[in-house]
Structures are given as C-alpha cells and as structure tokens.
Length: 148
Image (cartoon, rainbow, N blue to C red; front, side, top):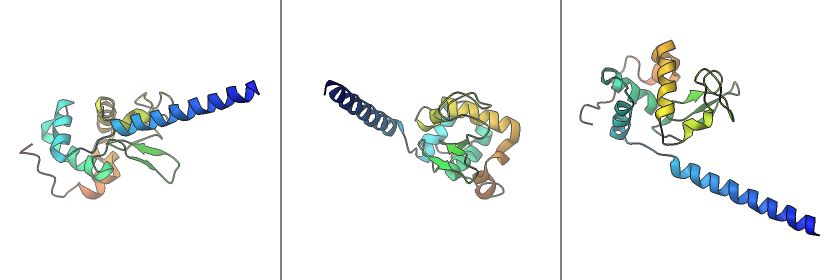
C-alpha cells in the first residue's frame, strides 16, 4: 500500500511539472508586430540594408511567432521565428547540429540564439536556404519597415 501511495505521489508530481513546463513555454512565446520584429532584428545586429528581406522571411516562415514548429515530410522539424530545421542545424532534446543547440531553444521569445543560427545559415546559403523567402519574398515587393 505504501508503495502505491509513493507511485501515485510521483505521478502527481510529474504531471504538475509537465503542466508548469507547458505554462512556462506558453508565457515565453510571442507574436511580434512587424515593427517589433524589425527592432529586435536590428538589436541583434542584422544589417539594416537587408532588414526588409529578413522581415519578409520571418513573416513567410513563422508569421512572426516565436513558438511555431512544423513537422516536415522528411521527419525533420522546423522551429521558431526563422523555422530553423532539425535536419542540419540543431538537435531535438540535446545540443547539436551545425549551430550546436537544442532545437527547443528556438521556441521562446529570447531570439539571440535564433539570430546567431539564422546568420550562420545565411552566411552559408543566403536567403535561398528558406523556402518561404524563395516563394514569397524573392523578386517581390518587400515589407516597408522604414518607419519602425
């Protein structure tokens, strides 16, 4: 009987931790306005000359949501504002990938790590690395962020 009570208490504790973790994740997620995004990108040293391209990319990839994740047909997952993919750039549940980070780190409202990894991707492949930029931004009118 004492063992059953102990197991029951452990299960309740684990459920509470899961619920707290979920609430914490929801609190950290953000849906940025276009100007908030532009200001954040500048704060993280994105060049002003490409700012409209970056804003368009983020709008196309994540809708400016820090908490977006998307399962792809190849079983990889893309995470966060920049939809950074787990196939090459990060690892689910542990540090790894080219950016040497846990993919889940891209799902909060702290975008320093997202920005560093996005710049690594850009430095290797340019904007062409992002399907959203290719289909919705390349050769099109870009968002006006001049008043932000």
